[in-house]
Length: 475
Ligand SMILES: NCCCC=O
Image 1 (cartoon, helix red, strand yellow):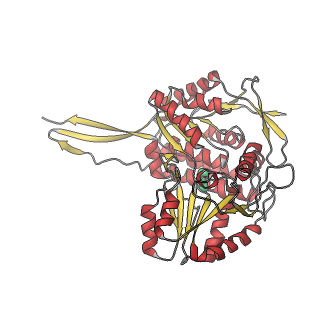
Image 2: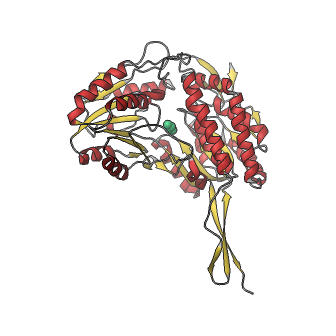
Image 3: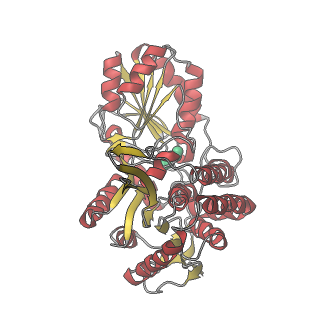
């Protein structure tokens, strides 16, 4: 059985063989590799490598950082087949999905940050006080501790490391325990392009993650994960006064008015809800439908959903693959088993056949606003439908969750679209669409969805600090 290794100081490093755990294929439930679990000594070894590397990398010019990031994007493209193979094995995702939604998008993000590294901004230098001239320096923070999730393992690692490295920081990253291999390949591809120790990967479960985010060597800790994990990271960061960036869960409302383009709404919402088996923090999960079109819209949504195929990684016609783990499948089944008696399963509601971790695309109606499936993130191919009868009611239901990551509004009334985009309490609001992202624009939430931004120049702000230098110029 293959035993994975950490990637520290530019090379693979065997971990302690004491706490090995199994990596299980979501496609067939079989164990395909063993992973070590980094303890304190290994995490400290990674931080030491990152600290030594920071002394060099912080003096690199933005142009040098740009060249390294651009080369990394090219190298990823040269290794696309290897990456698709690794990631489909660890996630159960479809091969065509990984290529388009992860690898291509990750290369684009790397190229964006390569350019953005050269365009950092600050206030104009000037004499704001008599006899004194002020300048602003934007500096890297130091060593960054990062924890990434399993839903898009490769792309989430790129979203974290690209702005960090572009700004001149060095990294210690712990990928999810179920999906470490694509991140190890990323580190391996990056190694010849950056000074030794700039990007280190330590493997393990939650205990290793706690060691990474509680290190006193970290200047920033950044996590994409659940609200529960985010609360723990925020607490441990606070104990050291370490800056934290938290990209946590979501429960996106999708508000459909009678004047929307219904055919387009049905098409996009079913894709945006079941894409990646709904394991997406911006997934279209809570469909709020104006009462005058409720029955007609629901019928179309159900018909379209029944035609959705899920399948193994090779299946070109499938919309999504397996859920990431047995644990995640149990989570989704748990939500279904706890549905109240007033809930109606319009379609789906069951696990798929076979040994893999599959679940049918599912639509649930009849729920009350306070019910668990409306209030909490399922992170599976499950959407709920609710009715509303006025703008005020739609807005109230949409905002009435603890999350604030993403939302969409569907209408042909321009003023209404604008009103909702202002009043929706979510970090991204789509108008007549749902799910697309781009590297130039920020991704991050409000409320319990966390704080700080991934992507865009706003994430470079997270990874830099602003220094004011004031010089006496009096004669
Ligand atoms: N659609 C990408 C969202 C990233 C987090 O799940």
